[in-house]
Length: 531
Ligand code: FAD
Ligand code: SIN
Image 1 (cartoon, rainbow, N blue to C red):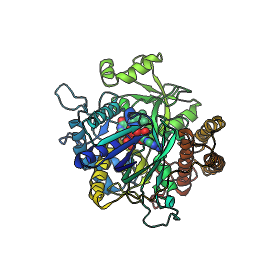
Image 2: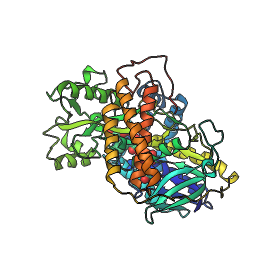
Image 3: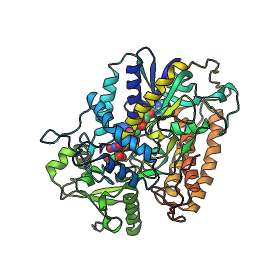
Image 4: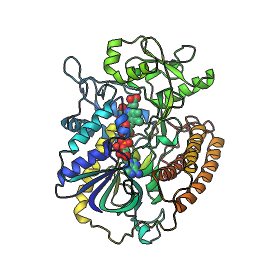
């Protein structure tokens, strides 16, 4: 199969790019591939909304820039922050143009919410299901366009480079180039080769590396692992963001999110004794940036010997609560919790990967013809900790920037037709699925117990030793077994786990989301860790 533009991922990043590219190049072929169905993405589960300077009387670009830089704990790339904040509102207007609906107040103005780390109300939202609405609008817009093919249930295994032509490719090879991907067609179980001139990775996050996560099952860090295997650059993977308030429901995965917007509207965190505690940790109390709130909760849980704290909404206006958070209200009611009468049990859960595939201001990776945007990319926007609701914004801004830059290249490029077909010789049907599922469990256990909110050198060392063993067992399985999505995802998650631990070991200070009790914060160690 050949296509001019190949997009891997159908979340907000991939769809934004594909729509723009298809409109600008009606004679070119754009193919979007997704490993399950099109709308099963992290995007669909976004609750709080999308940040953007909307009300310029009260808010300003400078304030949004400042808030992003403060949350990022001095590790953001300021030029990138300026780009995203200044270009963001234009991108939001475009998705409104596609039909996305954001809530309005009685006067007909957009009702702007607030979340941790924001100095102003600037979050556009659709109830507490913003991502679902945005994904709907993008997918419906896609249906109006003829030159896009959307293929579901195709699992991309690896990107194709010179390595597949028999050349030695190492980290120091100049001009590594991407020619396409190998993909497991889940309808036929065959491995196909797709050649493309431009390839965009928009494969999302990696929350599934942890036992407790808000991320759906697709979030296995596939794009990051593929680029690492292809010797491309990955950075800042140690900055895994834990959302402070996932609903505490033991044994349920993924965890249901209680959006930070609930705290923005007045919700208060309390410990098991009913005491509010955030004032002990930060002047911004319940609306401090996420790294601070998640660590405070972790500390309160350890101090009081509990597995969760509470979010108290009992003092909030019932009508307003139900209007803004109907999904959360219903979910809690379904569990027997009337949020107007009882507090909601919450605990932190792995939520967002701030690092990822290193990209420049046009979304270019270190591999030629390969772009990345959305959660799988590390643009420099988030630094050591993402400001709430900046992710959807970043995905749209960089979806656009990748489109501009790759569009300028397309006519100079041709297909590389010497690429061999996938060779599955010598592999057998998997004997025992339990080998894979058990290893996945072990991986999540290792990452949650040793590489969570609070880290130490000893814990990281242990994690690395255990990951090494999982790695060698899984590589042996990979070489001898017919591929399945489960095996590929396990392999990718182990790689991502390794990158998180390696990044954490290299960073000899605590900063933002990376908190190591053996290494306090140091002012002179402001750098990105590139692997
Ligand atoms: P995704 O939307 O995750 O899409 C990834 C796509 O890649 C999927 O189509 C998947 O099938 C495909 N894919 C992955 N691997 C492969 C493969 N190997 N082969 C083929 N296809 C593949 N951010 C905000 O800004 N505001 C919010 O309010 C907010 N709330 C959130 C709430 C929750 C519960 C979660 C989980 C996240 C939230 N976030 C929020 C973060 C935000 O939703 C994500 O960062 C963003 O949606 C990521 O978009 P994306 O397009 O990069 O990836
Ligand atoms: C939330 O709604 O709390 C999630 C927002 C985000 O992750 O940006």
